[in-house]
Structures are given as structure tokens and as C-alpha cells.
Image (cartoon, rainbow, N blue to C red; front, top):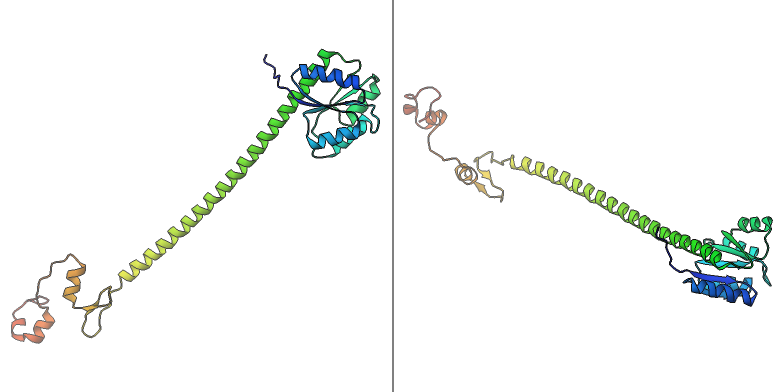
Length: 240
């Protein structure tokens, strides 16, 4: 099975120079980048300046204890996710339990065994990398979801505007059809007003606005009025 061997950025916090040197040599040989701090306050300042992938933290320090440093780190939203592995010559169960209670994720006792230290550190570094990648993927997914939500909302807005425009066009078309169906005719001379506002004789209007072919005749009423003798020779309701 393939194992992730990516190195991590490790902060070692110990007030004993020999321990710092030994752990630094072990971890550097294991492919990790190492920096050191000799006190709790120095460690806090170092972490604030550049957050490491994990911290190897001695319990007994000259100013703050390792437990106090861990508690402060876990109380800060910017550093609460940094893994803390305690280092101590103490091997009491209560000391280990207290380390876990304040937020530690593992515990290594002195004297150090190189293979054990490397295995434990590599495991936590791998987990730290996975957490970072998971957080990045989660943020990317949230951003994609946000963009998708905005896109869906925009599509809905455009569709609503489109439907509204269609309704307005349909309403306008109905109005146009109604207006087209109204043909103004002079009640006196019976001329028809065209769409340009000009008044035309009925014949001219029909020729210009229809496909009908016109022929001329005379209705019975006009025949009776203007040609009474001829009208009598036609059949009832006929036309000349």
C-alpha cells in the first residue's frame, strides 16, 4: 500500500538543547522542515508568525508549561487546528490524559526512539495535509455552490423577464389586431381612412389592401333611383 511521505513543517519546543538537536536531526533526515523554540512564549510567537503542520511540545518549559501553551493555541481560532504532540520524560497515565484533555493528539516519552518518533510524526503530518486539502476542497465546493445558486437565480430572473416580455408582446399584438379590425369610414362620403391617415375612395382602398379583383355593377336601389325604367326589367334583388 502506498503511503504519503510528504514532509511537514515541524516546530519543536524544548528547553533542552540536546533534545532539540536530536529531534531536529531525526526529523530532517525523515524529510521534514524543522524549526525550534526554547520556551512557551517563544513557541507562541513562532506559531503566530508562521503556522506549522504540527508542534512537538515539551511539557516542562521555563515560563509556560506545555499544557498552558496547548490550551492557548486551542483557544485561538487561527491556531486551534494545529496538531500538538507532547514530549516528556513523564510516563504517568494521568499526565498523558491531561495532555489529551487540553487538546494534544499524541504523546512521546523520553528517551526518544527514532523510528517511533518518525512514524508518529509522519502520521500526524499526513493527517494535517489531508485536513488542509479537505478544507480547501470544501471551500471550493462552497464557492461553486454559491456561484451555481447565483447562476440559477439569474436564469430564473431572465426567464421571468422573458415570460413578461412575451406577455407584453402578446398583449401588444392583440391591440394591433383590434386596431387593424377597425376601419374608419366617413359617415357622409363613405371614404376610408388608411393607416397613414389619408382618406381614400372605397375602390382604391380595397385594391391596395386586398387581393380582390373589382368589377362594376349597380345595386337595385341605385338602379331604381337613377334608372327607373331599366330597373323594372330586372328580377327582384338583382343588379345590373
